[in-house]
Image (tube, rainbow, N blue to C red; front, top):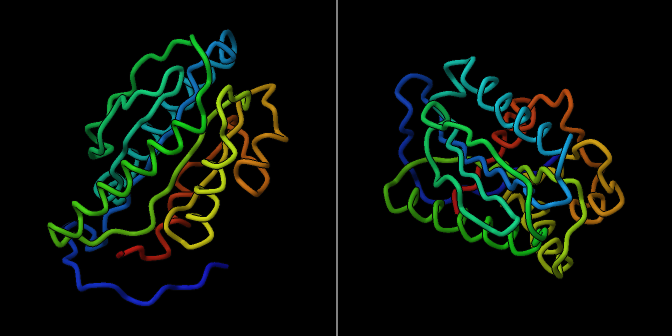
Length: 202
């Protein structure tokens, strides 16, 4: 169980329907050549399922903001937006798998977005980060993995490594510091709800 952090500055709650703070959610998606075939099809289906699951309930639709970073190469596909406005793109597999660079890019995006929240006096909770991959990185990912594990430990993010079929589970364990989650059958909202149990007003 995570320990609650001391309160930061007083922020306004902005969701008039639920009176709850916003929850940023970052998807780090592997679109490298290693994802060719079944894996990329599974990834596309998983992102569509993510959208469907989160828009099925009013509370999550109003609260969750989504951003997408793909790697193969690293590209910000979607800036943070309401999950109701999020339209999953059809992803294709090609190129290398710079997982470390994608993690760093994602952490930078989160840092910038949280600063925007603070400047606008918007309340938010700890972001949820999902790395969906086959687990065959081609860059120096170890230092980036250390950064995201430390951010998770300090309750700055909730980080989950999500495995497609035939993934390299050992690499994913090293990246996340915990047992990876399988994409097939995942309930994203359960993880996002857990992330939202702790404030990150820093």
